[in-house]
Image (cartoon, rainbow, N blue to C red; front, top):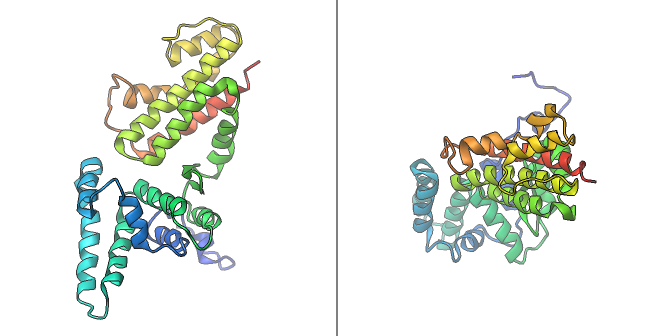
Length: 294
């Protein structure tokens, strides 16, 4: 731990918090004119019958520990409120809704905020404040009213990988790669174990699609059934890509084959850090491959 700098404030010296309870509360505070109970109602609507149904779904998807955390937070808060005679039902409901929002799996919190911004008549547009909070708390997500939260990674990953890739896939010739890359970003935002595996899979597919586009545009034949490594070999054989770029271009392929592809060796072990890294690797590869188009 580095000694504190007496010339700087506490917040600027604190380590990144991620979307912890404090950060979530700050984000909820931006939703002016929308109660936290309304945020929860919008999240549950047409997806879960009630909080118990939601908790059962959390157990199925995220496991018993996550479900227990949600259940204890909700029940504990309800019990605390019940012993305060001055609290009416509305105030108790708000407290329980707050507990649920602060303890639900992070992808669900992001979705709840997205729906509140899109579907509720808020007093003030919260987008700018949410993004300021994300930057100050070291949260690797960017928020827009249209799309909700999109993963950016840390500042260097955002600047050097994600933004160049998002620009590259706007090339109409890379429509296939854009479809897969957009899907990978959406799966990462969903954040369930299944979607994280799919994020890795779609990331690798995006690179494969980009390689096929380069080969096609350069007039080099390939088999539509070719996967990442054969496609890269064709790029090398045609003199389009040097062999030493293998690890840069194929960075997303090996994790897909190990963890997320069909017949993967370890199909049930993809955490968020792995999925984020694979998608960033795919972003770098796509930005590079786009530069090779004629």
